[in-house]
View (spheres, rainbow, N blue to C red):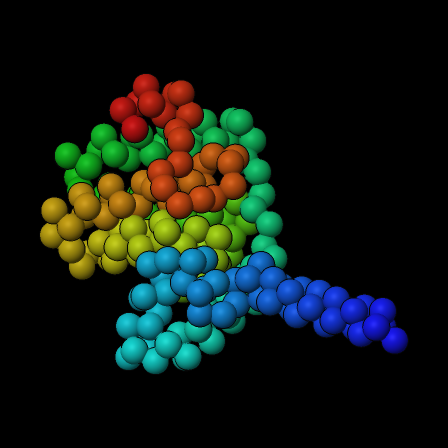
Length: 193
């Protein structure tokens, strides 16, 4: 009888740990969503006028819709083309900031699409999917997208380009996404980043 009680306690304890662990792995729960989404979590709460439950539902829906998306690898040639084009767009900024930001915005949309994210035709769908996999980098893309629509001065466009570069670097590399700057390829470094 004592053995049955011990087995029951072990089974119940294991089931509880499995249940709690499963929620963390999926990124559900306030702590899991905060960790997974970082600055996107705060943005969602602000957009929901401080209603954390509504923000968590929104972010949970994003995870459900885009969490199983698998990023597609880039061929070395495609990676090289993207790195070269990004460097050219950055160099063009001094002469024509608005054109540079517009081209960088389109380049990021194509790169995200080529990596398997929704097409950039519906920016909100693409940014929602990107936020699930690259939450720490999407604000720069948002800023650049707004700047590409002519809603920023030159300094704001420059800042948007600098900020959006982190998402570009995360998408152009083969390494899984992680917070912090992503490494560039050797050729990208030669182009002055």
